[in-house]
Length: 220
Ligand SMILES: CC(C)(COP(=O)(O)OP(=O)(O)OC[C@H]1O[C@@H](n2cnc3c(N)ncnc32)[C@H](O)[C@@H]1OP(=O)(O)O)[C@@H](O)C(=O)NCCC(=O)NCCS
Image 1 (cartoon, rainbow, N blue to C red):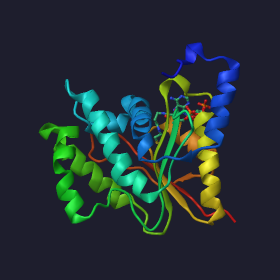
Image 2: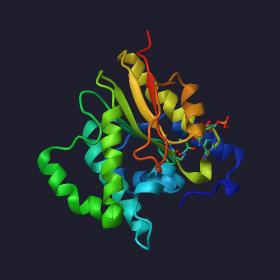
Image 3: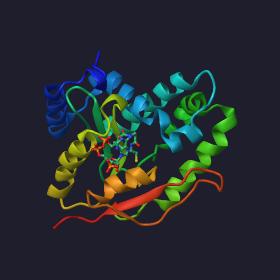
């Protein structure tokens, strides 16, 4: 079990930063720790909080959602990166694939999964959210940062910046653009520091959470 931040010595923190700065590609063998970090990191995210079911099944729903995202959207593209200790995860979707674009067969097969994640009560929210994401998704080729996550025990210590920088170097080596939707103003600040620019903002519905699409031009 990972040590909580309160137990983290300067040496352990330095080790975690080095691990985040030298990530490796995740494989299916890493599913459990990667999905766990994502579920823990996004437990208080305003967008996830808005569409994932809000009942006694919530913890299971979070695991189901991130298991699905990693196995169906992250791992097939081969660009899901993790620090060796799995405290830090960056799930990129490279071109030409696009986020949440499932084949017809996969879409049908995913219905029971989606229902267990959101429940009937929030199915409409998920549909409006997906429609809003699609409507704002850029047409130009790009790398899509679907999830960036640091375990809550380690946040605010530079780990997220370290894995972002390391994985952006791979995007830059291909002279490609990058895109993401930030889910809080705090996250906007982080991404601005890494060369992303806010293009607009949107909500899936008037009372829903705000998202800030951010674009990073190919670096020359
Ligand atoms: C966002 C996240 C990946 C950043 O990684 P991190 O290691 O905590 O951040 P770093 O230490 O590298 O950089 C700190 C900056 O990140 C931003 N930030 C966003 N959420 C933060 C958090 N919970 N704690 C600390 N910093 C956070 C701030 O801009 C902060 O800068 P500041 O200290 O000047 O305010 C991480 O906090 C996290 O997993 N949050 C929950 C999931 C999430 O929101 N993911 C991004 C979705 S768009």
